[in-house]
Image 1 (spheres, rainbow, N blue to C red):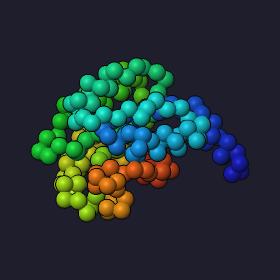
Image 2 (cartoon, one colour):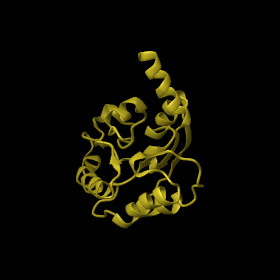
Image 3 (cartoon, rainbow, N blue to C red):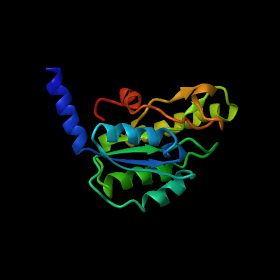
Image 4 (cartoon, one colour):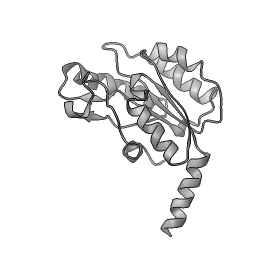
Length: 178
């Protein structure tokens, strides 16, 4: 029955505790903020968004400041922002920290790569960077949201940040195990 299924999903969300962390897209006015609203609206608990204007090595230093709580899921905004640098070691360290120290199950980690604005040349240059980053995260066994791609109308005035995305839309692209 549909009502029972909805109630079961709602109960699951109430027990879920999400960490939202990463580069600037994780911020309140961007994708991370929209996720916080959606998760809280479904009865879930959220730590964050914790957003920093940093590349992956700087983000590793920041995530070590996050206190261990009862996180059941982590949505990590990482990867692909720096031409010609993959920062594989930092990516591996962040994922290892989330799994080993924050104790988030690997199958409950979702990495969101920087979105691509097809009307912006710099943003388009992220495509091969994001592909390499996706390969690194896949080799670590974590879920990666399929590349978010749009046009100028989907982005803020700076051409790099998406101002809002529905959590439902993001979940529709995540794997079933997430």
